[in-house]
Length: 315
Image (cartoon, rainbow, N blue to C red; front, side, top):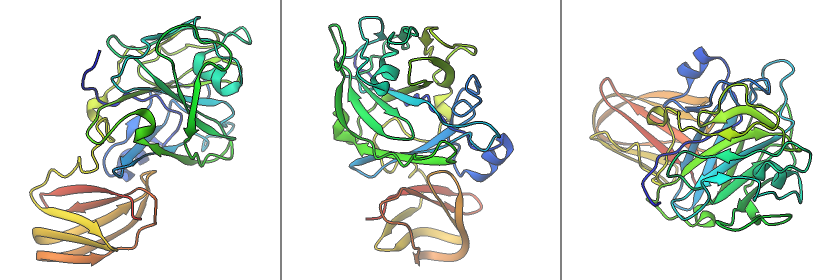
């Protein structure tokens, strides 16, 4: 069934305490489900994402700031693009060729096999599997039995996760890798799974607390995506909703339509504030701003009664 959907995502990460989360991130990120079956490495987290017209980028903050919590397993994201896919990943889908495929298919290779159910009307056709050694994008055939090696490896997702105590990481891949173009809609779901297919309850999408081991994973869709910062549509300017104009080009932020004292704040993809300055603007101003190349950053422009958030990936 093809339909417009916003982003659901189940992810592994933590953004520090709730109070610091709400105060330091410009727009709210998508938060996970608060479950802690694996210590909160996923369930206490959130993410930010962006799109530069070609590449999808996601930034995750991990729960490794809590003593004893480590990223030792596999984070799996399931992607539904609207094309024909699978509404259930059951015992007919069991790829045990390696630990990533075991995690994606919840293989029974080690006796933890279980079924994965997605909300009504949603069919997944891609998956991403990430651990501290690698991160890859896989295609899920939409019909038939899938056995050893049956998932289609597509590409790396350029994961920057290399340590089990790392505070955060990023992934990126081309939207065409999953058959999408600008303005297309998609949905994502995710879960934290061991290399042997042991299920944890941490993620996004309404996984029942206490789900573990060989329990079925049920994404019931109980996820407040309306309040998510991020995107389900591949739209680089989705926060361009104020009645003034702003764009970043050649090392400068160009603003027009403001006659007010204006705060310009720069945030990285993890929601950390890099800088904040004030500028008096009389109609138009070009403000030099140095940003990191090839990294998604947020420029937050605020006056007393206006706010605009630009997602920028300088080349």
